Image (tube, rainbow, N blue to C red):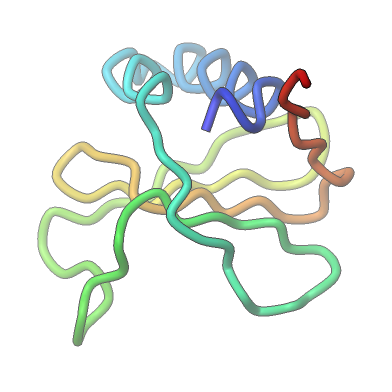
Length: 101
């Protein structure tokens, strides 16, 4: 994630550390982008960082971590202390890092 969206990744790390979640903050360095939300709402830029489970959403070991960004909403789905989904709502469009030619 941080190679594609470095600013949002840095913000996640900062907010998680401020929230007392140092282990989750450290895990942001290794988050991979699996897919976009797909809801097509213009206020949503949420991303999956893990394959979606079959059947019931997430099950045991799941918790939400609500962060307090300066703008919009950031809510993480965490399963067994691993970030599996980053809900990104009502925020300015994220800019992808462009690979150098």
